[in-house]
Length: 285
Ligand SMILES: Cc1cc2nc3c(=O)[nH]c(=O)nc-3n(C[C@H](O)[C@H](O)[C@H](O)COP(=O)(O)OP(=O)(O)OC[C@H]3O[C@@H](n4cnc5c(N)ncnc54)[C@H](O)[C@@H]3O)c2cc1C
Image 1 (cartoon, protein in one colour):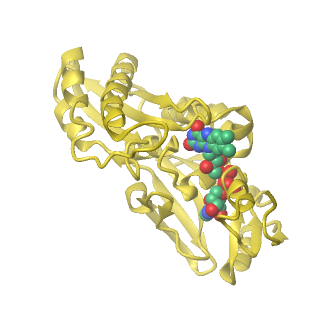
Image 2 (image 1 turned 90 degrees about the vertical axis):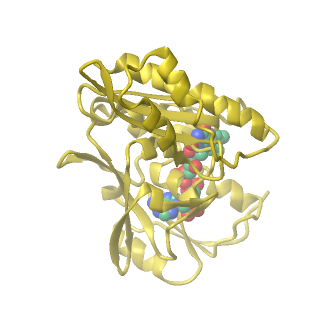
Image 3 (image 1 turned 45 degrees about the vertical axis):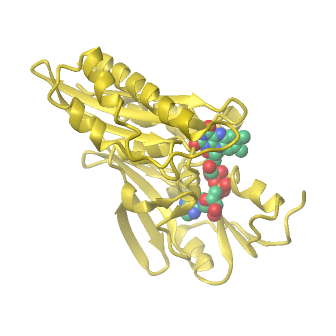
């Protein structure tokens, strides 16, 4: 399939990129893993593509003030292989290493993934567990929103026309934390039928901190606060984990597609949440 004709620009800095995006029917091109297939199917027909690949400072991964800041065009491979991310935010490195296949991880970017907002994408579960923030830029200025504000619905985010994701901000994980991302893989694409990300800390033999994010189950990823409340304060025994994970699907409006029915996803969300919590607890010191 051949896309509709379009203009192509590859600016060398962020200011020029934002100026190009400020007018007309321009769209950002990052890794092209999601956008190019949509254009070939003519489900998207932008008049102008603004390629961010030459904007060097959008690719940086750096530590600042207790956070890790990941530039929008860092690829999934950059993230899974970054010593900084692996050492100080291992949940994100684990999520990145679970995406698609090696070709997709070499081309696809964190900013493209989050802006595309596929309900089965891997990162959102971890971003929610990490209480990530999204730094957004446009020709008019900048703003930072929480991941919960950013993810609006399936394929829909809080981005306004002319805005781009500039970076994702996640906390440095304390050394005593345990983390895990577990997903049921759709074997053809690698996307998550369901995926659960967990972060835990223990203190005095009790679970002192729990964060759980779930992807693939519903139209948008969500934080499983019911699970967190049930597990916090317990000893984190297998029975405690099962009891907490059992409520993960409560109130969820589960997706149905050719890969899995809603009832199957609701059940698998419990199984994968329990697995993520169990592994995170075993890794917490
Ligand atoms: C075969 C295959 C398997 C895959 N498997 C998985 C999987 O297992 N798990 C998973 O999570 N994902 C998977 N993906 C998706 C992959 O992670 C993509 O990389 C990602 O969804 C889009 O990133 P991209 O950089 O390619 O963005 P693009 O395709 O270039 O862009 C996607 C959308 O985001 C917009 N955009 C891009 N960057 C920005 C930005 N910085 N600011 C604002 N808007 C922006 C574009 O305008 C476009 O609308 C798969 C993709 C393919 C093709």
